[in-house]
Image: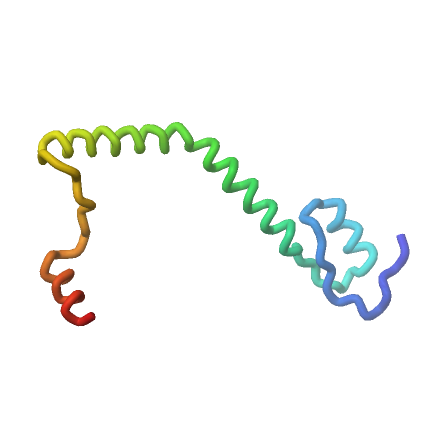
Length: 98
């Protein structure tokens, strides 16, 4: 393998071990960093694997929420308003400030 020019200080590369080895041989003093495209690609793949693995849990939680909303709608005789975690007085105070 040819030696890198003496000015090479940073090598941007894929995360594959083969590229790391080639970079070490070609420019042993250079700092190796993963490039943005590969970082985003790997993050996207990780999120996809996580979501695929937890899809059953997400479906169960959604079914429980839908069941709870149906129960509330039947017991309150009307549409269910979104419940706020803030107190009514806090909401009124904020409206008064605006």
